[in-house]
Structures are given as structure tokens and as C-alpha cells.
Image 1 (cartoon, rainbow, N blue to C red):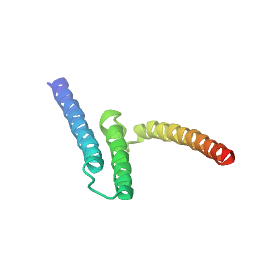
Image 2: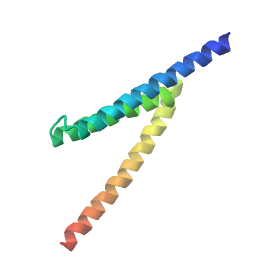
Image 3: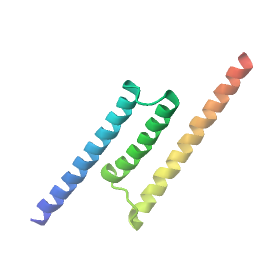
Length: 103
């Protein structure tokens, strides 16, 4: 009975995560599709919804929370994200510089 209870709890967690991710995605698409906000505000709304969706994925699908054992995983993910952002940002700076020099 304990395994069945754990299975149902895990299934419920995945269902909550799926519905949350689906609602956030639909909200972002609806904001852009139906022009619910001015363009600059819509970009901010979509960005904020994306950040919330990252948190939803971390919590419900990757099972990363603020417990002591999960903090190591979270630090690894945050460090990987930092390195990726630095690489992408550096590439964009170089490309912008090249574009500026060619004009």
C-alpha cells in the first residue's frame, strides 16, 4: 500500500507540473496572439512567465527544492546556466561588434 501511495503522490506531482506548465505556456501565447499588452510590456510578461516556468520545471519535473540534498543539484544547474549565459552573451557581443565594424 505504501508503494501505491508513493506512486499516486508522484503522479499527482507530475500532473500539477504539467498543468502549470501548460497554463503558463498558453498565457504567454495568448499575451502575444491577442495583443493583451503593448509590445514592450508583452516582452516583459513573456519573460516573467518563462522564469516562472523554469521554476515549475525545476520543482515538479526535476524534483529540485530547497532541501539540503537538492541544493547541490541546484548549484550545479545554476553554474551550468551561468556558463551558458556567458558563452551566449560573449558570442552576441562579438557578433554585434563585427556588425558595427562592417557598417
